[in-house]
Length: 102
Image (tube, rainbow, N blue to C red; front, side, top):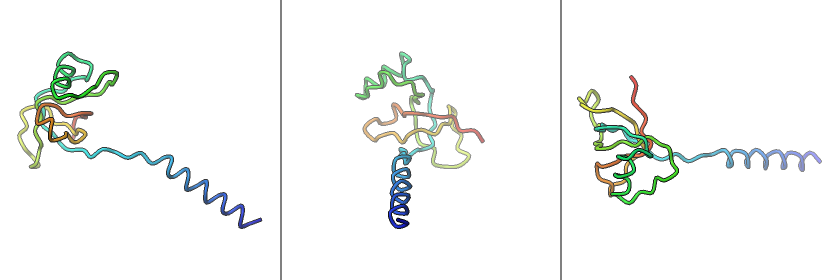
């Protein structure tokens, strides 16, 4: 009986661990000209330009972004951490951008 109970408990714990794992997209620090809502006219236009369908999403997007590679870099724009932009989007847009606060 103990073997069955311990097997059941172990199975439940493993199932919970797998069910609660949420993979996260890699992030990168970016310097963006502006940060807009994905529903904004500018955000929608740039997303459509690169072939992204952001309809129904309400996420901050960075426009005109370049990677921040040096600590203390003079950004001159908005410093954000974004889901890593894909190479085919160039520096036009980055998704899910959150301001960097020091």
